[in-house]
Amino acid sequence: MKILVYEHMTSGALCTEPLPGQPVREGNAMLQALLKDLAGNQGVQPVILRDFRLDIPSHTHRCHYVRDLDDFRRRWLACLDYVDGVLPIAPETDGLLAEIQSWVLKTGKRLLGCRPEATAIAASKTRTAECLAAAGLTTAPTVWLKDWQPNTFPGNALVCKPDDGAGSTGVLYFENATALNTWKQHRSPETWEKEIVQPYIRGTAASLCLLCAEAEAHLLCGNHQQIQIENGAMRLTNITVNGMEYSKLDHKIFQNVAATIASVLPGLWGFVGVDLVLSPQPVVLEINPRLTTSYVGLGAAYGMNPATWLLTLLHKGMGAVELPPQPNPKVTVSVEEGLAIQATHC
Image (cartoon, rainbow, N blue to C red; front, side, top):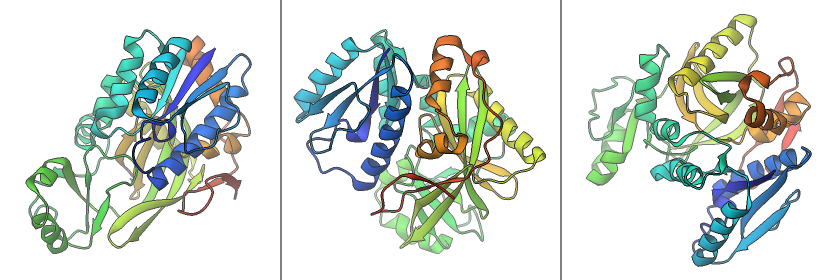
């Protein structure tokens, strides 16, 4: 099976502008881990588009270098014609990921990813919060920046971020309402329409790795996230894959979160990430309807090839996916700027 692994940041889609350092580093790490895992399955031939400024990664059946936007369009269409399926990894921002998913479906190719209608909801933090809260999950109180007033969340530190942002891009921390209000007054009304405000929830930053399909979800592992606040910006610096130590009761709680999310958004398919805060019960912040950086350490945590589950899901359905017992090893994935992004056992 020929699979186009489309990683947007490294694909050449940005060939006419400077490459954004951190998103490219994380995208490249996810791409390389996935290529290795896919190529480890008999009969799978990974195909990629590649920005001409980047090296060719290992485990690639075909690599198409892209030097300009016309080149990108030609090679994108040629790849769609050549492959059997597409696995897209891209930011949800401005509807990009949903647009790519829709394009794949229109060509009649197999989409190894979430359906665009589910992505459209998951891409919006406000819509996600509304859907999950209606299903009984605890979510962060959320208002649009245009509607936020200094007395909206009294006495709290605050977080302001794009409604459709990906990762920690554009996530800002404010110690109090006065600081946020000063910042708001120096921003345009257009910004007010796109940003949301939430109270800063104190607790343990965490994430879940899920495998979803058919309105069901397997909980693969819970991860501990290290978040750094520097000059008012919040950024992820470290992930401990399988780093959440939980009892059988905790596992049941997290599995319930996973199952509820899958039932509310039945179009979720494949690897999905969920960001939350343990305060002490889980407060869901957002859903990532795609592969996340935690995938880089998933295979090491389980001691096996996670892409096998994805291919089983594709060919035989959710009922045929058999997971081993919950993994024991903890695996660190450092995303600190300037360091190589790779998985190391704790």
